[in-house]
Amino acid sequence: EGHAAFLSLERIAEFRRDHGVSFEEARQATAGSNVFTTHTPVPAGHDVFSPDAIDSYFATYWPELNLTRDQFLTLGQKRLGDAWEPFSMTVLALRLCRDANGVSKIHGEVSRDMWTSLYPNLSTEEVPIGHITNGVHAHTWIAPLMADLYDRYFDPDWTTRLADPAVWEKVQSIPDEELWARHQVLKEQLIAHTRYRVLQSRRNRGEGPDRIHAASTLLSPSVLTLGFARRFSTYKRGDLIVRDMERALKLFGDGDRPVQIVFSGKAHPADEEGKRIIQKIMEWCQHSDVQNRVAFIEDYDLTTGRMLTQGVDVWINNPRRPLEASGTSGQKVCFNGGINCSVLDGWWPEGYNGKNGWAVGYDIESADPEAQDLVDMQSLYDILEKEVVPLFYDRDSNGIPVGWVQRMKESIRTNCPLFNTDRMVADYCTQYYSPAAKTQARIPVLSSVR
Image (tube, rainbow, N blue to C red; front, side, top):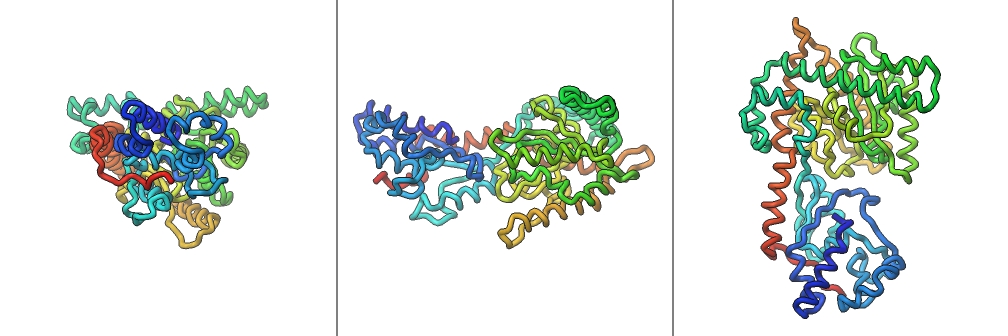
C-alpha cells in the first residue's frame, strides 16, 4: 500500500547499481514485479508531503537515481510541472508498479475513475487497476461455539476448504433450534461483556450509584440486537440511526417488539467531527426512554470486536457511497450467523443476494450529501420497522424465528466461502503475485519521467 511506496525507489536504485542502467531502464525492469494495493477512496487515506518535506529527506537521494529534483518530485505529483503540487504516495506507487488493485469490485471501479488522469492515453475502463475483494481470517473470527457446531455438521476437513461453496452448503443440515440456541448464547456473552465494560466506564467517570447499578440491567438477550462498531469517520455516518429522534425513540422504545443496539469504535485523534458523532451517541445512551436499549462500549479493542461480531443479530453499516473501499466487520458477522443490513458499498454489493440480508438506501442524482443522508436514513428506519423487526419476532410454537434462521443460514451459505482470507490470498497469488514474480509485462507502465 502507499506507506511502502518508497521501497520501489530503492528497488530501482539497487537495480541501477547492479546493472549500470538508466533510471528509466531500471524502472521498467522493476515495475513488472511491483504490485500496489490501494485501500481507500477517501482523500485523507492518501498520504501527501509538501515539496519542502521531500527536500528535507531526499535531497541526497535523488542523485543516486540520476534524477533532478523536479524529476524526482514528478514521480509523486498528479499534475506534472506544478512546483507546489504535493508529493502523493499513491501516485508514486501507481507510477512505479505495473499492477494495482482496489479491495472490492466497486472500489476498483472508483479507483480507475479517481486516477484516470495519470493514464492520459487510456480510457477509464482501461486504467490498469483491478480488484481483489477483502476477506477475513475465519479461524480468528468464528466463535468456538459456532466452530463446534460446524464440526458436527460439516465435512471433517471443512477448516481447510473455507473457500469451497460445497462446505457451506451443509449449513442447511443444521437444525434450526441448534443454530438459534448457539446464537443466543453468543448474544448473552455479548451482553455480559457490554454490561461489564459500561460498568467500568461509569465507575471511571465517577457516575452516581443509580447509573452504576443500572449497568447490570442494560440490554436483554430476548431483544433484537443491532451492532455498529468501526472507526467513527464522518463518511461512515455512525449517528445515522439516531438522526430522527422521534423514529429512533419509537424503534428502540417499543414495548412489544423492542430493538437494542451496541455501538463501539474510536475516532482519529484529529477528527473533531468524528468525536462529535461519538459524543452525540453517548448523550443518546442516557435518554430516559431508551437508556436500557442503547450502549456504547468505550476503548474499542479486539475482544470487543469479537464479542460484537459473534453476538449481534444484525450488523449495521451505512457509509456514504462510494467511500467504503471494502469493509470487513460485516464479513466477520456472517461466519457467526449474524445478518448484514448495509448500504450497497464496499464488499456488500458482491455479497447481497436479496435473501441473505438487507440493502439500505439508493443513490440519488443530487450531489448534496445531506439529501443522500436523508434518503438513506429513511430507508434504514423503513427496513428495520417493516422487515427486520417483524421477521425477528415471528416465532413458531417452540419460540424459534424460523424465517430469521433461514436468513441466517443463507448469510452463512453465500458469504462465508467468498469473504475469507483463503480465497483472498489465492486471488492475489494467481491474479497478481505469481505473474508479477515472473515479471510478465501485461500492462504498459506510465509514461517516462520528464
